[in-house]
Length: 375
Image (tube, rainbow, N blue to C red):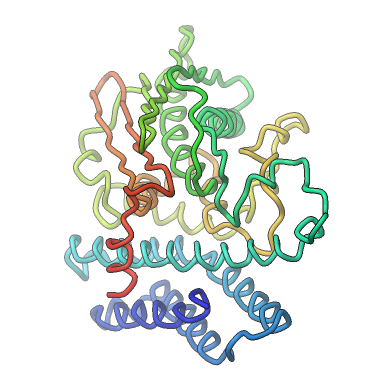
């Protein structure tokens, strides 16, 4: 079994990467916490015997599920540690380390979550011969891959989430900008839904927040955020345009860095709050029952015995600036052969471009991912 044979090796490579860091960096309590989690997972998984029966697989899934839960704090703790150690290593080396760690982490979690999802599907009543297939949209999933991922639906869901969170953060009298969609609104492709929602959610969160803050207290209605969806043969491009004033000049050079940039103390203070926030999007405490129905793609998500590693980040209030949203989004996009670019006009607004490669075509960067996972 591929998924059973390789996680220990991947964890061992990442442990080696952390062991090659300067000693003073590894002794940082947050980096040390991540190291201990990885070491515990390595020791637990390497002792699992070969999976030969369904009962063996159930026990293995229970261990994997427990490990996924324990590792939900990895991203915020890692980000805190990187910021605290920014003066102990060259920023370029620190960014290279965290990018490699995050890419490898995506590989492990995708395979682990896919194995759990496929096991859940195998155990479902409708899996057996002559059983009636479910009528809900869960039938459009193959494990964690959503076969009918619609760009318009994802943008609308993430946009509603960003608007709701802005009203909660800035008050009910806050006037949020409309989100106007145009282009190929029927574009549909297979993708891992949680990854796409995280990327688009971060981009829309930034745009909504920038427009709300720029037009706060103004009698002028805030201009809409324009989203253009363009579908090509092998990829989908989404452009998000706002008039929120653009990215401040002092932030722009380090926009894609985890360790560089100003506002260090603010980022550290905010990151410390992330592990205490809601674990799943469905647990958000929204102001009305009606708004809770507008959560991102809640109609196509089934309950899992584990939580996504992205939900505590996706569900945070928009005024809780972490400074890792865009770098994280770029890692997730590039892992699936995608790309994010941003063009800022200071004093006017931002155009963000997201190119999504359709999963299953020849553009997948399998060799690149394999080299990252195996290094």
